[in-house]
Length: 263
Image 1 (spheres, rainbow, N blue to C red):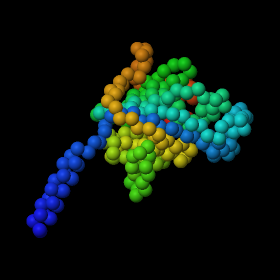
Image 2: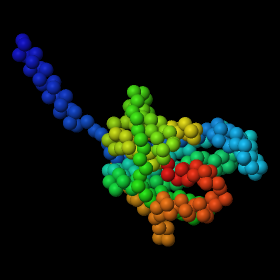
Image 3: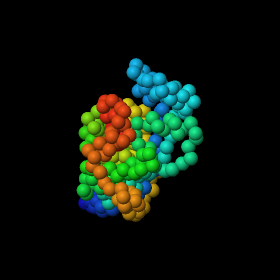
Image 4: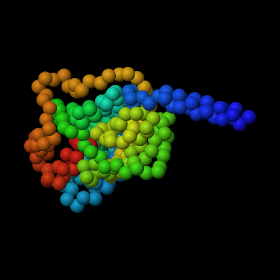
């Protein structure tokens, strides 16, 4: 009887081991995210309380606070395949009061971001004043600290990690190791799995996956069809934007604007 019991236990161990070998951890697919920006809280905290806010800025901010939405919701997609990701905005027809409020969004709204983990490089296509800039540089490093908080997002079990990017921007991420690839929206990554939830408390932004579709779509790193648009480093892009768009800004104010291009 003892031998039969031992044999039964042995066979179960083998069966569990065989099943473990065939657990499917996908490394390609498309994730749809919904990003919510609480515009009213952000403007009241970052603009209306500024003593040096000039008359024109105050007029525009007051208009958005008075007639703009409480919250802006936008949709985005992240395609991932064998160490590469492509993050982009899903184009929609927004209400008219969205458009003015989107100007105050502390991250880029209409851009494409390609990341290649094998080369540790990213490319980001930026639109401004009818022109295109192709920013290309190394992927920013996020300093992570794991927590014991867990949440289910889009059917995947996720663990919370707190991080700091650009030495000052605090982020909260929920990642799952059920998707084998280390990745995430925007330029955020560096955890042992895919980030399905992302929160930036200082910017009043939350982004959570609503759908995960597994597929074998390959990714192209070519973000623009224009041959005139050549890649520029962070330093070159910063100098170009400073000179052509934000020349009138004080340096500390410009630095805050610049941070959204590196997020």
